[in-house]
Length: 60
Image (cartoon, rainbow, N blue to C red; front, side):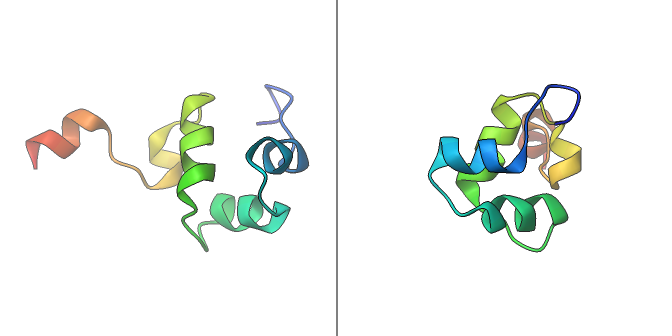
């Protein structure tokens, strides 16, 4: 996030969610689908979010 210039408050504003939703999702204490989708679309590796890659999901 820092490397790409994203801040928690910027993400929260973009998604119209409370900043705590972003913080808790990043910390793994919550799974807010809108936040996860935004992070994935902006280059966050799925493994960091506990998301399987699509190929792995199909194989299971």
